[in-house]
Image 1 (cartoon, rainbow, N blue to C red):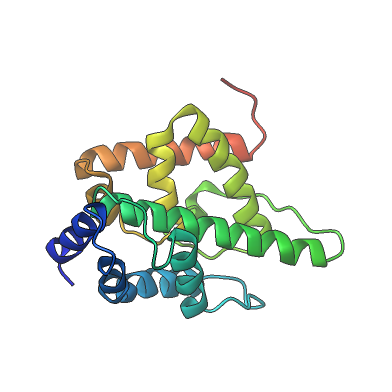
Image 2 (cartoon, rainbow, N blue to C red; image 1 turned 60 degrees about the horizontal axis):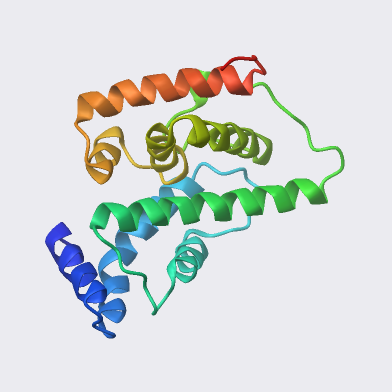
Length: 189
C-alpha cells in the first residue's frame, strides 16, 4: 500500500465518489491490522478483544462505507488511532467494572512507551491523564495517542502528524514527563 494510493482514495471520497470508501478499506486494512496486533500483543492475558475485531470496530466507528471527507492520510490514521484508543478504554472500563475492587497501580513513566504492556487499570490511568493533556496541549496528546494506543513508532507518528522527527522526540519527552506528573497525583498548572 502506498501513501499516494490512500491519499488518492481519500481525495475521491472528498469529491463525492461513493465507491471510493469500498476501495479504502482494502488499502488500509493491513496497516490497521498490524497496528491492532502490535497493540493487542501487549494487552493483559485476560483480554478478549482480537486484533481483527479491533480493526473492524475501528472501521465501523470511522464511518464504514460512509467515510467522512478525510483531508489526508495523516488525518485518517489519527482518527483511527483515536477510535482504537476509545475502544480499548471502553473495553478496559467494562472489564474493571466486572471485577471486584479494581486495583490501582503506580505507573513508572519508563513503562509508558509504544504499546507497552498494560493492564486495564494502567490503560485507564493513562487515558485519564491523556484527556487532561489534550486540554492543555492537543498536539502532544495526539502524539501520545499514536504512540501508546496505536503503537506507532516515533518516526511513524512524526510523519502522521506532519512534524520533524526531532520535534516529535521533544514532544514525546515533554508528554511523558507531563503524564508522569499527572498520574502520580502531583498538583500543577
